[in-house]
Image 1 (cartoon, rainbow, N blue to C red):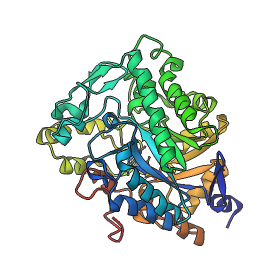
Image 2: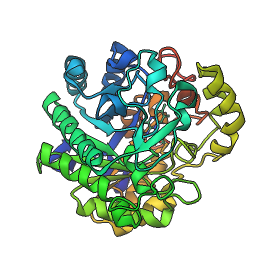
Image 3: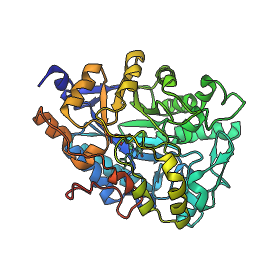
Image 4: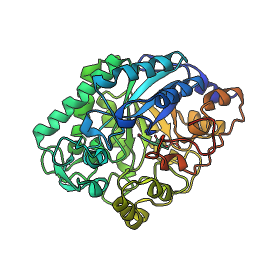
Amino acid sequence: MSDYLKKCFDEARINGLILRNRLIKAATFEGKSPNGIPGESHIRLHERMGEGGIALTTVGYCAAESDGRINENMIYMHDGIKPQLQQLIARVHATGAKVSGQLSHCGNFTKSKAFSGRGLFSGKRPMGPSFGINSLGMAYGLPFTGAMTVAEIKDRVKVFGRAAAFMKSTGFDAIEIHFGHGYGISQFISPRTNKRTDEYGGSLANRMRFALEVLEEVRKNVGDDFPLLGKISMTDGVKGGVHWNDSVEIASMLDKGGLDCVICSAGTSSMNPMIMFHGDNMLPNLIKNEKSPIMKLGMKMVGPKLFRDYPYKENYLLEHARRIREKVGNQVCYIGGVCSNDSIEALMKEGFDFIQLGRPLFFDPDFPNNAKADVNYVNGCTHCNECAGLIEAEGGVRCVLNEHFS
Ligand SMILES: Cc1cc2nc3c(=O)[nH]c(=O)nc-3n(C[C@H](O)[C@H](O)[C@H](O)COP(=O)(O)O)c2cc1C
């Protein structure tokens, strides 16, 4: 095993948290928490990741508040699910792995209300930086988005802080703040969705204000010695949005704001999702699993414009993530298309501190152990993206090529 590979499988730290290697399970919402309650299959999935040798498993999409969910089957941070989360954390800890939670808010991109049919969504409309269309809520009675007042922004900042305090008190070892993918915080960062003319809009410094206030508030609530990761979109992948060239500045600002480790992703779920999941186009499966006939029709009509083709290649975000690695002082985590020890070795040579794995862990939850045992390890994920197409299917995400793991 080369020194670079060895580095990956040796112990590492994020802000004092000792990790047994440098492989982290990426945040992937798996649809295994019906009605927002983590079920046994959700808990088992993370436990299984721990058994497979992952150092840190990330519970995907932990909404900061109920209205921060995209649908009612997502969890939000409140006492009602503390016992289930504590069980999940205890079972992962028993495997020697640690647990992070992805602290998220959907902002103006939700179908919560109609999805539940019980009016779970508390406001009149989902709120973001500016007025606009909530493409996801079209068929669910929430077609428009509202512009938050400054008081509402300050309130959301506090909501993030309280959720972070809850997560720490529940026993999470780390928190990953979701700054990307077109969700709440990134709606402010993106000039495509942020049309404000006050101190929260305009220049990048202004568009980053909400993100930095959230980071500051989260840090205040968890303390200086608690590991905070953050996932950014290096590009929105749409005209008028965040561009690759902005990404170094965004990562640097978060570094200066006290983030311990930046995760370099790309894309927006609402406008260009495939850029984050290079591989087969998932639109056909999403249409198949969509419950609303109106949405189905809408997806057939508009979908091909949003779900563009990005053919798979190993380490497909490297060209851009490398610039962040070169220019930003804090720890940097690579994500996107890591499927073999060759990929891992290349990333370690580039100086990345951690690597996140998404789809390949559904194909082989033993990826870390198997890769450690065999220098020639190649994961068999084909990037068919069937897993992602199952996000809202009965039973949630599974790998269609691995019947032993669901
Ligand atoms: C089923 C599925 C669900 C996902 N859910 C989330 C999510 O909740 N939050 C997030 O930031 N990224 C999410 N992603 C994106 C992954 O974290 C990751 O960026 C992407 O899969 C690329 O990494 P990979 O090539 O290792 O799979 C999801 C991906 C998949 C396949």
